[in-house]
Amino acid sequence: MDADFSGLHEISRHATHSTETLDVTIQSLKTVRQRHRELHEHAASTTAGTEASWKQSQQHMDFQVQLIHNLQLRSAANQERLQSEITLVLQPFIFQRPLLVN
Image (cartoon, rainbow, N blue to C red; front, side, top):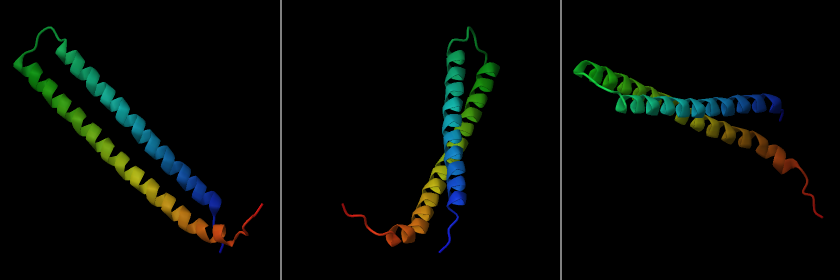
């Protein structure tokens, strides 16, 4: 059996990077959303128009956070599946090695 371990490592590395990038993106979006709420709460005055605009922008940010969160969940699931595939490929090599007994 001939396996491309460097290729598997490269794929795994990219999967990990993608998941980490999505994690950081979620945190950044949540921070922006919180800051937006704080600015609105401390605004000197609001009108019906500005209130509607604020609510619409807040809903849009909530949607963006949820969208990225869903992508992060998919990325994490793909990473787990990839790890299972790597384990499956490595099993024959692990069991072929002689046991070292001290």
